Image 1 (cartoon, rainbow, N blue to C red):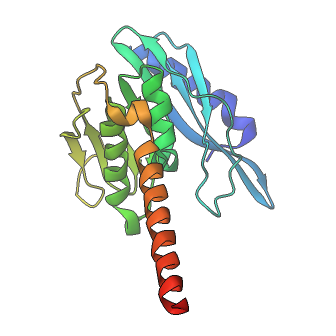
Image 2 (image 1 turned 120 degrees about the horizontal axis):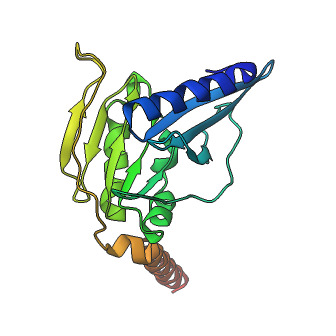
Length: 216
């Protein structure tokens, strides 16, 4: 959590660190907008190795009961020297539409900074892996209080760091960067919708037959 008055200095330190280390940095944090009632601005910044802020993203899907401002801005896919990069925050990647939007924009790598609780560890990280398979891109999910993981577009584990192990909290992963065209990214939930219509039709037909049998 960052107080509004401290946010500018916090970002300045992150930009300086990115320049010094010569790394792209996804800075995830929440600004405590009000204390009573609690209201958070849950977001990340994508900072380049030159210290430039390329993207500011607000969480689109707060967890039910989470006092966060809902983001509405379009998802961005950034052109970097190593590939096309997108991102989202934690619960956002429970929603297949997010991954489809990234895939259709050409994302080759998606980063998902997250914060979980022990009751859903490591299920939430595995759910994000499904989004990578659907979208045809690699995914890195760095999580607080649960397992962090990195996966390629086939869902293969490239790195894994359980939260309960005695470690230094640093996960290093090497993932391939590139697009794999997938049917899920192209047609979305159409098969599910079609299956639902078929089941509804069969149920209606069975009900009609039952009524006819009763009437006879």
